[in-house]
Amino acid sequence: MATNTKRNNVLPGFGLTLGFTLAYLGIVVLIPISTIFFKTFTLTWPQFWAAVASPRTIAAYRLSFGASIAGALVNSVFGFIVAWSLVRYEFPGKSLIDVMVDLPFALPTSVAGITLTAIYAGNGWIGRYLAPLGIKVAYAPLGVAVALTFVGLPFVVRTIQPVLEDLDQEYEEAAATLGASRLQTFVLVIAPALIPALLTGFALAFARALGEYGSVVFISGNMPMHTEVVPLLIMSKLEQFDYAGATAIAVVMLTVSFVILLGVNMLQRWSSRRLAA
Amino acid sequence: MAGQPQREPKRPGTADPPMVRIALIAIALAFLALFLFIPVIAVFAEALQKGIGAYFAAIADPEARAAIRLTLMTAAIAVPLNVTFGIAASWAIARFDFPGKQTLLTLIDIPFSVSPVISGMLFVLLLGVRAPLGGFLAAHGIKVIFAEPGIVLATIFVTFPLAARELIPIMQAVGSEEEEAAIVLGAGGWQMFFRVTLPNVKWGLLYGLVLCNARAMGEFGAVSVVSGHIRGHTNTMPLYVEILYNDYQFAAAFAVSSLLTLLAIATLIAKRFLERRVVPAKQEQDNLAVKVAA
Image 1 (cartoon, each protein chain N blue to C red):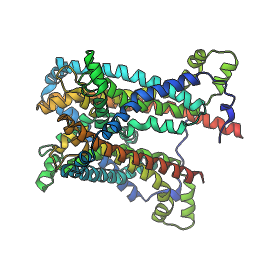
Image 2: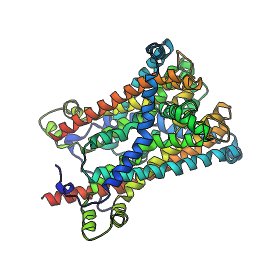
Image 3: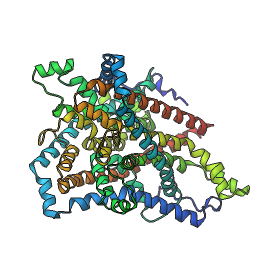
Image 4: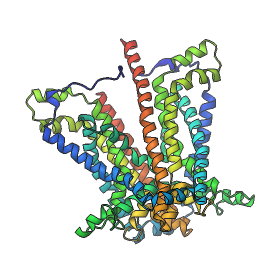
């Protein structure tokens, strides 16, 4: 529904604001981003390949992707339950919880990192109960997954919540009237409407986890081949002034991020078409 | 509030069995306790483990104060710049049609999808002493990387989309009728901006500012790459937390962390308060649109 107020526009400032927007975008974002690609072109193919496919890098990819998927899956399940409880039920402390869900967005990642480490270390509040069971969280791959679950927590809740709020309960009533059990209604009526939002939330949590550095660096212990995630590997290459190697790995990660972003955009277009239909 | 829509009355066909309800609420609370509430409590418990005196001594330490100063200064530069950008971008995008608008929106989002470490690395590649531009600046005595300007630049990059992303939809929702009326009645461009546009989007603007500020003060990964970790000189608060922690000064690290946690909680409260003001404005517009359509 295009309004035609934008034709014959009497409003001023188009040239000024668009000019400033493009200039600022260019200086702050586009020029810095382009340097990484220019830098990549200065690498020889063997140099590039040695950086992106060394055993240490492959171990880091495996941990980064594995722990990010694990975190995003945990968030999909529990984030869904949290969103469902917040929208459909009344319970004491609900508004406090609704506010707190965004904490991982607002809390600096270094604070999250040292706090999670303190809690899950062998003598920590939670770690001390897990240690006798032989479960090691801090300084182990499990700790990386815990940190990545923390940073991705708001995404699934905040993508499902508005969709659930807008979901017309008449369809559920209709299903109940027609003799569906509550479980059937959930699986056949409610769940299909929420799938695009759930996938979007999963993808956003996954993408965020993939690039995460601050909350992981403390809890992981940073052992190469074992608990080193990709952003950490890039960091250690930068600290050794191996800019070529860092750039090569960064380009791989940037490409993955852009592909995920593209996928999320397509998901959102798909779901808005579905809702419109 | 009288205008607030009341929760819909219980509808029998849509209620879950009580057992299911109780179980789901319990699972949700347990999950959030584990990942949100216990960590927040732990920050303050760890910060106060050596007593209130040690807590205040850690915060009043000269290095801590230098870190607080640098954090405030960084936010004081990055936030106004990005909010100004947000206003300009939302005006151009919400009020005018031009080719490439969708591409522009995608480009504005780029910093969201770049890992903090890579964000910092971009500036090392561009402005480090080995890069042509960085070498030129170094030759003229301007140090950017491993110094404050690098921290500010990296912070501007990571907080770049925040204000614009909040302002664009609000500017669109408010509509341009009042602004057109002002112009037609003879107002100048700036007059219209300060008397009509700004009052209309003020809550959304504040909302974007709060989010941008929280990220600017809390950014860790990107500034960590460009800071060079020079004690008492190029540390923001999140970086200083790392230094204290790696020095095994746990109580001090958590004391500084507790300030950042309070900032985070204040941000969340401000965010909720502002959301309530931003959303009704949008709903009013929607209702108006419905009335006009009918």
